[in-house]
Image (cartoon, rainbow, N blue to C red; front, side, top):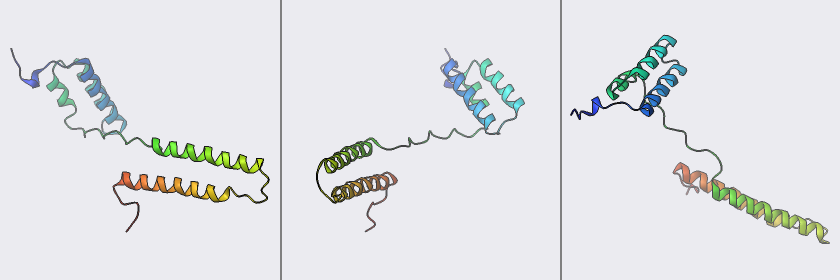
Length: 133
């Protein structure tokens, strides 16, 4: 029995992965339409894995998936807590009899805590110090 890994039979999943690489290379302008058609035909006709590797040998490796963008969960929770507390403070001020808008002081500190949290998080992800000293 031949156990050479280059002569292993190709699976449908492997063929699909290589077909996607060929299609992506065509979309990037690395292959002409004729080359795409020829390579896709050879991908689906391939019986062994070494036949598949030949089809992508002259193509660059696919870029790694982009890092997930968006607000991290701890920061979303912090923002939700700040929103709830801010709403409660404003409702308390409206229901009360104070002449001046006293919630401005705690709202300032809540907003500052949220900005500091976001800044620390951003610099921690980038591998830098949040405070430059």
